[in-house]
Image (tube, rainbow, N blue to C red; front, side):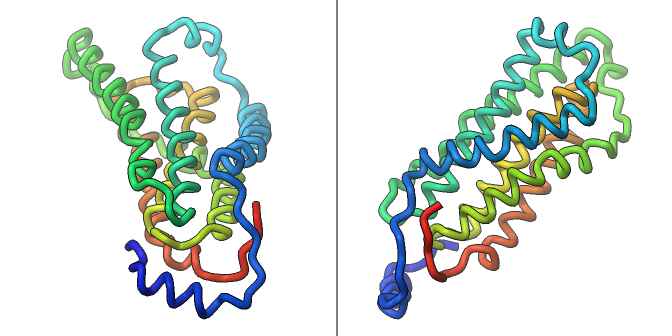
Length: 221
């Protein structure tokens, strides 16, 4: 839900005596978020163990595109989330993750088609893989908490959207890290369990948006 202009003016007037500091530019906040998130992801992936075929996977173009698209989704969604909390920013910035998200899903869909053509219905065999959910949650813990704290320091212009985008950023970055350790590569399984977990966490974040982002004393972050 987007805050109406008159409500924003009233809230600003009511809080006019509260000391505030100007937020750092979204790109600077993005760099801070990445700097906080990457060491944690590297630590968790190291503890989980790198997949033994990682060197081989880096030679597969499809896997590289999937990973690049997932990383692009994380970075563009984080940037969009930070922009959404700054009054006066262009509305189109909030749609930045759409293109990399389509590339990510499109690459996985092409993988499903290739697996079906090469192995028939057996190429799309479905199996349970509950390890994806706790894996993404664990890897995305610090990125998610850091994102939540940083979004709370922005203006709640569109709390549901901004927090939802933040959740998408954290979970997509976590999925990027999980693929460095987890050996599940069947495209259908990745869509259902890994992308499905990203969607679940994004939706949960959006639901919490209005509770998380509220008007209060603002500090730069």
